[in-house]
Image: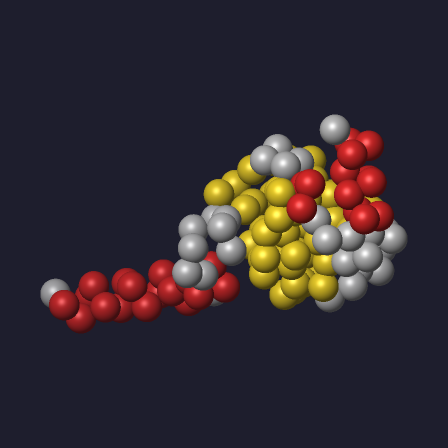
Amino acid sequence: MAQMIKTASASRTQETGLASRRVTERRRVLWGSRIANLDGSRYIKCETRDISVAGARVYLEDQQYINERLYFMDMRNRLAYEARVIWQKAPEMGLQFLRSYRFDEVPSPALRKHLEGEG
């Protein structure tokens, strides 16, 4: 009996792949969001497909060059996350959050200007 439970658990782990390595649970959503270069020079609309306290999966409609480090803007909660792209498979990419800011605390003046225009 114990062997059967162990085998079922191992199969489930293989099926879930990357999801099984996540420490935090992701929640499926469909939100409008933005990503931007750290200096705020590029500001791109995207769609959040799932999100957790540690990261997000986003969809980019157009194929665009994206820096490895960027800001992800959660427009619903008015939070900006400094993030790292951890995987990219067009048209989606996975982000790992490194640090968070309220919109009025974002270090980039150019990005704050973009965000003020959204509000």
